[in-house]
Length: 213
Image (cartoon, rainbow, N blue to C red; front, side):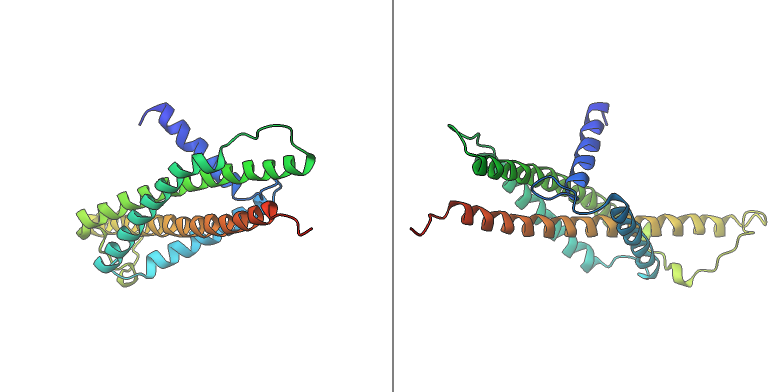
C-alpha cells in the first residue's frame, strides 16, 4: 500500500469521524469525550459477542451479511456519483443573507454526505475482505472459546499445542470483534446518512416553497 493511498484513507477516516460529530451549521453536537466512551463501549460489546458467539459466524450469517454489504456498496457508490450534480453547484448572482446561510448549510451537508458515505464504503469493503477470509479459511476461525480452559503455564510446561490453541482463540475472537465493529459502524453510518438526507430534503423543500401571499 503506497504512502499516498494510506494518507488518503487516514484523511478520509479522520474527516468522516469529525463530521459525524457536527451538524449542518458546522457546530459540534457530540463531544469527543462522549464519542470515545461510546466507541469504547462498542468495542467491549463486540469482544463479548465475539467470545460468546460459539464456533464463529455461521454460513447463513456470512452469506446474508456479504450480500447486504455488496448491495450497500453499490448503492452508496451510485449515490456518490449522482451527488456531484445535485450538491456541488456554485451559487449564481447576488445572494441575500438568508440564502448565504442556506448555501452554507447545503455545502456542509454535501461535505458530510460525501465523506461519511465514502468512509462507509471503505468500511464495507474491509468487512467484505474479512468475511471472505472466513469463508476461505473457515477451519481457522471455528473455535468455541467458551469451552476452553485458560492455562497460563502452558509455555512453561512446553505444552505448545495448548499455547497455539490459545493464540488461535485470541486471533479468532479479535477477528470476530473487528468484523462486528465494522458492521456496527456501517449500520450506524447508514442510518446517519439516511436520516440526515431526509432532514436535508425536508429543509430544502421548506426553503424553496413559495410564500402564500
